[in-house]
Amino acid sequence: MDAHARGSPHYGHFVRDVQSWPVPRKLRIEYPGAVYHVMNRGDRRENIFLDDEDREGFMAALGEACGKTEWQVHAHCLMGNHFHLVMEMPQANLVAGMKWLLGVYTKRFNIRHKFCGHVFAGRYRALTELRRREESGMDYRQIERGWCLGGEDFRRELLEAAAARVGPQHYGVERRVTGEQKAGSIVLAEMKALGWNEAELKERLKGDPDKVRIARRLRRETTMSLQWIARRLRMGSWTYVSSLVRQPPKPPSSANSED
Image 1 (cartoon, rainbow, N blue to C red):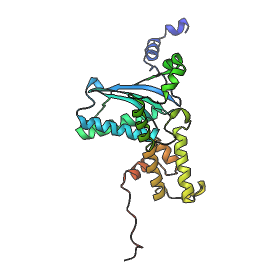
Image 2 (tube, rainbow, N blue to C red):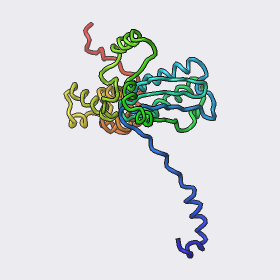
Image 3 (cartoon, helix red, strand yellow):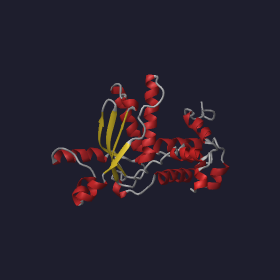
């Protein structure tokens, strides 16, 4: 800036405006198969768990998040005013999943205790295991797919019990499907079952019962936003979709049933 500009009466305002510009946050490192140590604490260091029911509620929400994102929780620790999670990500979806998890727990916590406002203190911390992977090499690869404390018989029992509850997606390193691809696959499978093509999807009413059912499934099984669901299913505004999926499913009509 030249001397004439510095002498301008507006120069001081310009400097103050520049100094007040926000500094962008550092981007999260996300990639399929990543292992994170995630932690967050309560706003103003206040408790985020007031009793065992809160802890059970957090674990229930975490379980729902795992169902949506295919996360694998290797270890967890719930303290009074903070938590620690060690998780493996089959998909690069840490940000979307944590946004859902913290938002849902905050909403349920506030409703239960009749509170309002923030529960967690700002941005959660997520430390990756990149350094450990690079330093340990193949030694790290041997434990990357899970570990347990106990003898071989105990390990075998755990694996047998888990076999009935997990699918081929369980081991995240081999999975390369993004959240949007998963949601898109659900939509295509539902359309195929209904005999719809894209033109039929567009012609259907925005509040078509089958569209609403698919939207509910997407909300239940994925982390896709209401905006994405409204756009993909041709259902109009996301607020309209929100009101539809919140309504209890209507029971099958009995008008044509035989007496």
